[in-house]
Length: 134
Image (cartoon, rainbow, N blue to C red; front, side, top):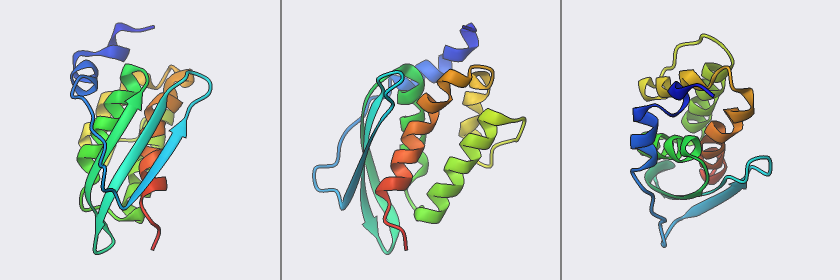
């Protein structure tokens, strides 16, 4: 695999750590059976939007980095906004589409590695699942 796949920014994001919210309003757990990644996303909501997010990841650097970005971007989002972010990540991985969220550009080197797309998408899918739909 390309050394760019695990570039310095990916490593930095993955090393940022994670924390769970013990008083979360909602949580979602997703597993990737192909690679063994597991994530739990916790959200605290206020007025239909994410007020705080926490996560726990057992997985690869890509999954951990994606969880860090999803957690950083999530405050202030409702279910629809989180869904748009997931769609942006998916489009970024599949094509030359530019991301609406600039932090997502870190995943451009993952494009040619289709088997790793789910590692990146898992945290964003868990976030969407955790946020109650209006």
